[in-house]
Length: 68
Image 1 (tube, rainbow, N blue to C red):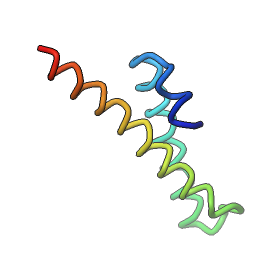
Image 2 (cartoon, one colour; image 1 turned 180 degrees about the vertical axis):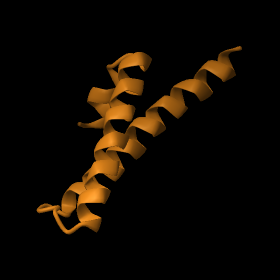
Image 3 (tube, rainbow, N blue to C red; image 1 turned 45 degrees about the horizontal axis):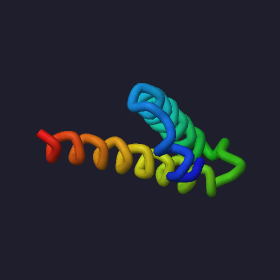
């Protein structure tokens, strides 16, 4: 999912997406450790998705604190 699409979502939706992305990353790491992961690029994609979502949530929290 692109950053532009993520910015259109609410904080609650982003938090749920972040949880799902972290769970997916964990599952892929376990599969990779047991040599069951067929697409190793999935690790990189999940890692970047987690970073992308975390960045957007952080940007929003910073902008809220600056407004106060």
